[in-house]
Amino acid sequence: MKQINLFRVATWCAVALTVVFILCPLALVFLQSFNPQLTLIPKSFTLKWYTMQAGGLGPALRTTVLVSVPAVLIGLAVSLPLGYAMARCEFRGKEFIRQLILLPIVIPGVVLGLAYLQLVNSTALRDVHPIPILIAAHTIIVIPYAARSIIAGYERLDRALEEASATLGGRPALTFWRVTLPSLMPAVFAGGLLGFSRSVNDFVITLFLIQPGAIPLSVQVYQTTQYGIPQLTSAVGTVLLICSLLFTIIAEYVLRVEVQ
Amino acid sequence: MSSGKRVAWLCLAPFLVIYGLLIFLPTAGVILKSFLSTKSLQFELLHLDQLRLSQFTLSNYIRLFNDSYYLVATYNTVLIAGVATIVSVVIGCLIAYYLACPGGDSRGLLRWTVSIPIYLPGVLASYALFLFLSTNGPVSFVADMVTGRSLSLVRTRFAVIIGTIYIILPMFIRTAYAGFRTISYNLVEASYTLGGKEFFTFRKVVLPLALPSIVAGSLISFAYAMSLVVVVMILGSGGATFTTIPLEIMQETQGMQHNIPMAAAMSVLLLVISLVMQYVAERFLQGRLGGKEENG
Figure (tube, each protein chain N blue to C red):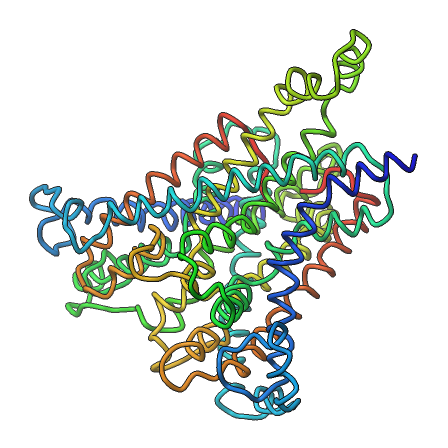
């Protein structure tokens, strides 16, 4: 009997510890962002950290949107034909390509960051605005997630629908627009959301490529730590936190995606 | 058939071009750089005239594996990633099994909580823990009440280990959970019927069956933990008291005395470890599943 209890107790301890360990620091960031003074328990409430110029919340939000939205769209545009080829065509080296798609997840961010820094610094890319360069780098972050979701979507798709459309005289383009794409939409949306989340969250690769005036949110959190005002960093962090919680809710409850 | 193949390659073309230009070309540049001695940020693959002038050398790797500075950095990296992985595997297995057992579907809050860090930026997680563990945080507050002295745990290896666990534990739980889910619960019940106690059943029936997933999950977590730089940047001491390989890569690229070939050699080390771990992990997962069905 004693052993049963010990195992139960260990499990309960692990569960309680983990929930506290994950949630408490985040709650602290949220609380501190509204705290006028540096105290553990806020005595009054302020929004001044959110509007402070030094926090750079507005420009950082703008950069994040300017980088991540195009990166997701390009990533999806590349992944749609890729998904079609992987799910519907037979060719040599398919398994190899399936592994290849995952490379950006496997290669450490710091390695890719260094690689991009080296490439950008010694070629004509040096004079290009940082935003297009960030978009290119973030496209690479998005593709594995978008592609995996879309390939799975294609594999689940009922081919009979497309065949019916073709039999009824629908041209391939019409069939794709009216039949295939609408049924693929959940997979496209799930892949895009995951990719968007990874793009917004990326820190290391972005850090190698940023220039003043084009700093996205995740890096801005780090930049504000240099001022030594925890509440300011917490305010920028809380905006990111709310985005992350939204992603979690949509992904886990609305779409029920499976992430690795 | 040949036209079908043409369509396939046409569909693959954008993907192959993007990966070629943005993965293979830059990575090849780093690998090449690690064998050169020119310290500047040149991309030799596109400047072949400079490549002709530069000398090939193994000195970066020799330094990496002999210089005590880099050996200590490697030791720190392996220590932090190793301890974080072991703690995550022990706690993660308990939680994943708890979630995977019948009735686990109703454990929504726990499921949701352990999913949060997967969607959370590493920089935010690290900073949240920084607040949590620093002098103004609750840990210090409790220490102050008990001992009368405030307590700062940040800028230590301990803090970096905690931060690493925060990020890899949820990743590990996902993989282990997928492994536990494939086990038929009938086997567990059979063990109970035959008098097996709960822990005995877990150890003798559940763990052996889920072992490939657990091993694969720990390998991937370990490789990921080794290359994590954001945690060290925020919870570490900025290289003042201890440094790690990924932090060194960052620092070699900054400041006046940057040494890109050395950063490249360390990157190749991390790259090789990550690729090997991923390959072995994949082997473990496929060996158990006997194919490519429901992976992940």
